[in-house]
Length: 213
Image (tube, rainbow, N blue to C red):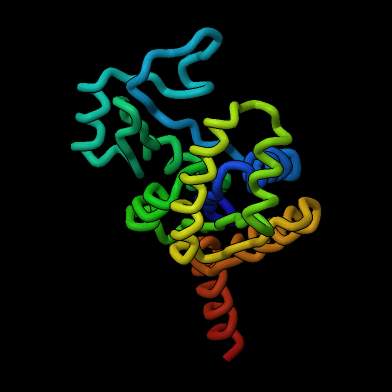
């Protein structure tokens, strides 16, 4: 039995709020932190490998996995199915490893309502302002003005669901937000439910007490 059980760390934000950078920094901070690899029914793109970017599945296989309860969360997006296989996540947290998820608010709800939801930690990252959010999207120079406009419209829908999350951080300073994230994760790792060895330790204390009395 491991000293602690792993966390399901759900990190969500609108595009441009800094989620990807923060996730990368968390992975650098703790080498034991695993990134959840999603399953999808879309075809692999050039350079993608099964099990690295995604677990590539047929639609029939994906639907059967969902029917069997094998997906923690799933969604249908632009004609393809995406989801999180439950088995590797369960194996990771039973081994004491935390798993990092990049999902939206709908995925967050499904994970928290799953049988592993009691081990979930959900954090939403807010931008300091809408103007700053747009500036960050423009600075990345990855998208056209039309795409940026669509991302901005989608961002408000995502922001409007901030109340579903346990923790909400305003990313006005990347270094400070990173430190707050580390503090939250370190504290949540110490929750009673995350420490399965506590029960046997207390039983040992009881035995020692009875021997003395």
